Amino acid sequence: KEDFEQYDVFAILGFPGSWEWPRGWEARYRMYASAGVIKAAGDKGFIGTLGPGVTFTKWDWNISLEFGTGAVYVSDKTFGRQDFGGPVQILGHGGISYHFPSNVTAGWRFQHFSDAAFYGTNNRGVDLHLFELSYRF
Image 1 (cartoon, rainbow, N blue to C red):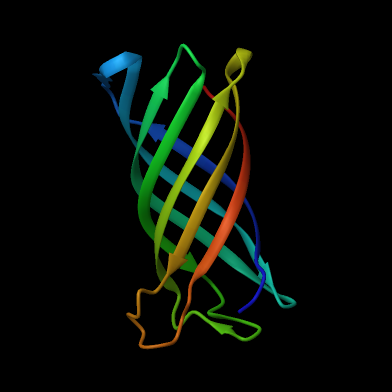
Image 2: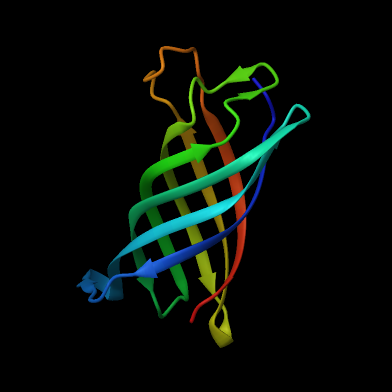
């Protein structure tokens, strides 16, 4: 119903260990977290996310594919004509990243969140295309 913008900082914590997959792919569990601002229809509010995911990396190509889920907290439940129904939402995301030299990574992520009809509203959810620039420690 509305066009959303999101600006945030994020952290990815890699769990110890990884699994080798066929043809040189490495799989690893991760925990994703973010905090930022979401805006639409002249309204803005805090948004925070937290959840697990998995990353598949092919180091020969410097490429990673990421998939995850989790929970979203939004401080404002109404943005213009769009009513989320409540502050807690369900998150799903997937993306691709390219690893540059010097631990710099650039990527694109598709993120969807909604209440999954938990609050009984007609919440279509929010689809976002997020562009990322990160540094790996």
